[in-house]
Image 1 (cartoon, rainbow, N blue to C red):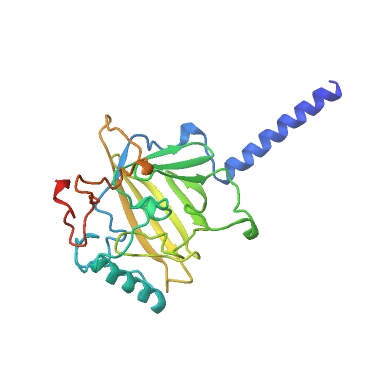
Image 2: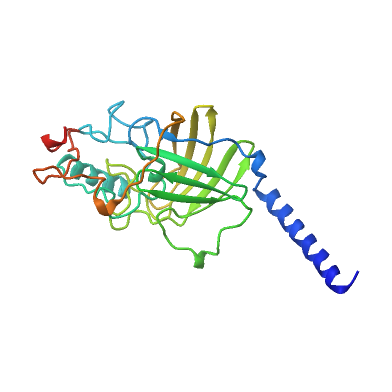
Length: 273
């Protein structure tokens, strides 16, 4: 064998070894991936933490409704201030005006539908409402050095598979600095120190479950665990896109008013009916 052939064989062996190493760290062959195909929709309304909502079964439009994250005193006061603005109808939702993406973890708390693209090296979460895209790398990579990270809407996520459960950690999130990131319309917020570990699996053939453990040394006194579930839609379900520039998220009535709901959950304009 000539020197070129020896180099080729060595290079091929290196590729195989690298691929094997990465697979051992988290990736898996496509044939071994669970089936999350189809279109999914979140169960329940857009209350982020349904386990702590009061009154029970309240919605983000129920007067006085609130959740109870393990906030410290400073961040509890911030949340209470947001609740007061919700009550008087002056609390802005940045995604209502097409100002920002939903971001993570609110990305897991949207109406309309979801799709999940599973590949050997990454998982993609695609939302109809937004639209929003989140990438979770499962190829064995590590997070970049701290000086190469900055706050973004969906942060940086790396994960691995434990059987049929996707386990991923998300860091480098924007948090709520200027009111541009909330978790739901009651005014829930997190800081840019938030770190979220999510365990996502099929609870049954028709249900996906995501259990998020949220740690935030700036805003929380202990980890906050929130569970979201998604139901599989009929096979002929269509997924559409939102073009925010067309303002089709908040259409305008013939009288010139935006067709959204007020704090009492009622349509603000009769033309919306």
